[in-house]
Image (cartoon, rainbow, N blue to C red; front, side, top):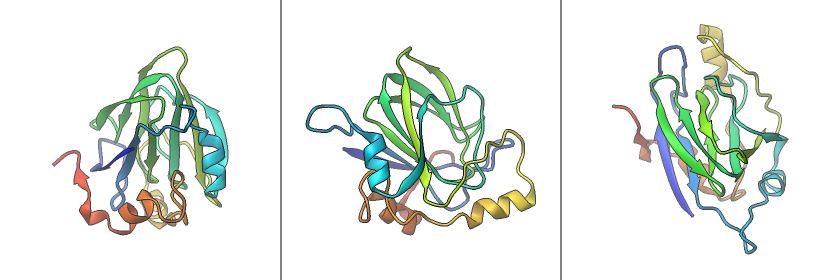
Length: 172
């Protein structure tokens, strides 16, 4: 498994997250080749689990961090708002988006399927317009998850989100 962190600055009307990086896990595989994202997320305390795709319009969540595990297919996702970064993802890849991070599906294979979830106690609201000052405060106040959705209590998220200064920036 390869991991990467990307910090996104505000992009047009999308606030992104001022302190936490997007986490990208590449090439997660199980012994049989298939990853049970739903089971893994649930076992690591992430809730509100759903299976679908990613909306084809730019949006963000102000009240929750979100994990997206690519269960099948491929896609190009625009992460970080209109001026963000297009990321090619494939089955076995996983993204953790901190609250406020814009995301949009730019195109995908017919079999594209994502398993999503949120840290326990957090609710995803769908925002499609500029964040108010109250909403920016809400984004900054969303608590850190107790566990990494992929690796549990000692996973990559725990290290990267508790020490975000070690992360690279997508846009300078």
